[in-house]
Amino acid sequence: MSIRPTVSAMMQTFDQHVADQLKATPEVITTEGEIDISDLYINVPKWRKYPKVTCVFADLAGSTSLRRGKWEASTASIYESAIKPAVIILDDFGADFIDVQGDAAFGLFVGDYSRNRAICAGITIKTFGAHVLLPALEVKWPHDPPQTGFKVGIAISDLLAKKVGISGTTHNAPVWAGRAVNYAAKCSQQAKAHEMIVTKPIADAVRKNEYLFYSCACSDSSPVGLWQDRVVDKVSGSDSQGLILNSSWCENCGDSYCEKVCAGSWKRPDLDSFRHAGMRDQYLEVMKFREANMRQIRRGING
Image 1 (cartoon, helix red, strand yellow):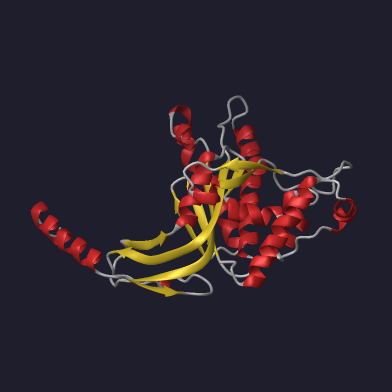
Image 2: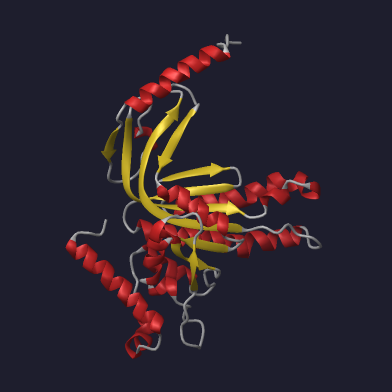
């Protein structure tokens, strides 16, 4: 067993560490492309800056109650039944970094159509919770099934990253500084099981995409908006003006719609008459958001 320093010696060491860190001006290195955690700095005042990172945060609802009473012996199987598929979904949709924090998992997305892929991953996790996990639990415990499912949040921002901890050991991990992870977690916290809440920049992308915003072609009725406005508490500025989604992927249209969104498509051919007739004020709002975004891109201010 190693000799542990005294508490007073620790405080003196940490006092100097804090003073040194606060005097230093860390170097920030903008890094384009995929996130590679093996390339993150440690023990030097250097951070990598990844522009426009989308974070999907999926939290298992009701997990505290799963650890009490009669569910205690089954908690481990429920956790792995739920969390592993969420991680696989994040990976399958191309998350550059994935982490598991107890009863939650989050993934970071950069690169081509990263925002679209992140939104589809979030809906897929939510769909898994509602259509696979919960029915399986009801079969296992038909008289009193545990009430759970995924609460999903999505946000986007630039992120600073470096490794913090003890180099040369397993006691270090990436630290992500920026709004995306924090805001995605706050969205998740305010959702209920089988709900997904997104911040305004993600909501803007949803409104501009007909495959995401409107009900699918299965219904004989006119398309309707699937998302509702939602103010996200403890999220500052305009980011708080988000949206909430209660529905899941359609069993008939989900596969094709998901593939279209991930490939960058936004315009549904089956909505041509709906679009041209101007039957919904919501569609005009979609076009307004899209045109505003394109003007920003042309002016070079879409940062």
